[in-house]
Length: 493
Ligand code: SF4
Ligand code: SF4
Ligand code: FES
Image 1 (cartoon, rainbow, N blue to C red):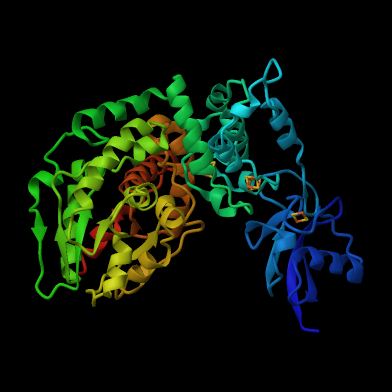
Image 2 (image 1 turned 180 degrees about the vertical axis):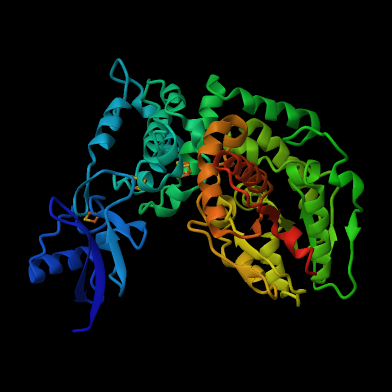
């Protein structure tokens, strides 16, 4: 029988550390733990029940991520620990009591005064909405990874999912929006880490957080600062105030190259049009240098992301309609973005689009990377949540950075941990945004690099501010420049 070695975290009154065991290759982690107890008399404590991915009790941290032990095959070198961010009772058993207490506090049952008389009036649509958020198996995986729950006073993803479930249930009479609001619904950055780990693939962000915020907005449970963003868009069709000449007013409508390999339309997004014009100019230069012609529709507007994420869907629909009228009628190979938020919104929320959307790092890899000039520097990369989890783009920026001669690429501790800017949190709750931003800043300073590179103007702004604040608070001398990947590339094309 072929064997593999795995490490298991032990914690009891005599032990606190890892033990290594040999187990048969190809079995699942749950069977492996039972094998260890039987063959090594190890007496490891863990939970399990259904053995079929249905009860959620066997969730544990496997190779750093929460997984169901009964659904995960053992691999050589695997590391098995209890779920993170819970108190450990013994070995792999965490204390679930706070979870059950919180559920009870949220009144985890249908609230109504009288038995409903018109049950036949419940429509299939009503049931479908509830269905999308009710498949939870109480595994606690989402709670164990939510960065906002870890660093701020936020109930956490599965509780918001449960509140959404009751808010959508036409039989329920409770004011679930009010509870969600006071449990800090607006702290969620929509980073989607909870979605990534959910074994039941519940779309907590789109089907619970954003929908709850939509209901909250209608009932008047919103953040004052989000209304200011609304005013900007009503005035300028942009989510930020106009304080200098926008990119779209200063650039040409097209930048064509000879023997073009591809023709793209550039979707600038609000921050690049109104604040980071240099990033827009760098993007055009870099695209042209790769043999790509660029078309820039001048009447494009905000993609609507800030409004979808904050529940102001009335505005988002209008913006979407305008952009669809413009971009559906262009003769281009694709629409390119240099902003993770815009890209994710166009890809996932513009269901009626007739064009392909690509992040700039995807486009450059697709046409083929060119020979770059050498750059003597060190660099680390921050994965914007809406690029990695929103669009599945992870390798492309790394391939680009690693192909620049002399550039030394250093990975930070958790490159895809949210920086705190998304989901309207930077505008609505700056203190929450910084609670996450300072963790990101520490990780970045730990790499001791010259440049932090990303592909999102919101992350770029927020990380720059967080590094500055963290530097002052901790008396750090080192300066780290923050830039979009196109700005770094503009130095080497
Ligand atoms: S999207 Fe991110 S911040 Fe929001 S609940 Fe999920 S893990 Fe937490
Ligand atoms: S929402 Fe998904 S990850 Fe969270 S507890 Fe339920 S099943 Fe587990
Ligand atoms: S034992 Fe029930 S989900 Fe694994």
